[in-house]
Length: 118
Length: 112
Image (cartoon, rainbow over all chains, first blue to last red; front, side, top):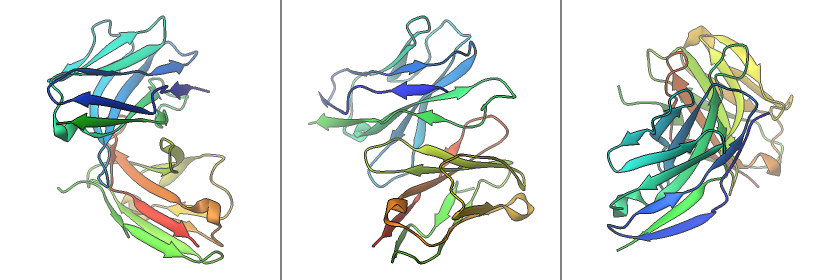
């Protein structure tokens, strides 16, 4: 079974600064997807960024980028120019890419609570 | 389309009572998922539908839990004889095949 570990329960960053959230995972599969989801207080979870394991290039979405290290099974999220609206719980998630396995369900880490200080 | 909706948003019930939650997915999405999120944890998969067929149930889903998705549209999750350990946020998500899962706002259940 796959597991996802987020070792930072809480992080804080000053507005306009850069912060990196860590995530490691364990899997025996060679092809899979990794995600970062954002869950603001009392609001629904939204997808921030996704990475396909077969792609060597790190995904980027505006101020959000990832550092995907497949051999190390590491998938960190970098938020640049942090804004007050970035404050939220961030979850790292894994999903298998192949049919016949659990390619439909997401496996989440425990989350990292990000505080943005003005 | 306004996204995935869930009803109610909050439910307080006494131990031993039955509760039912509803999820309305994005209209063209054929897959629907239920997750449970307890305090300090990430969401955990409960069950999954493709159209009206329930294709997978987690071992977390005891026999007190039942889910349906009649006609492949909305879904209901019923918990019978609730226990305090059932207190959690119940999240619904939908997707078109294996594409991105869109989450609803969740139903927060408190069992007293």
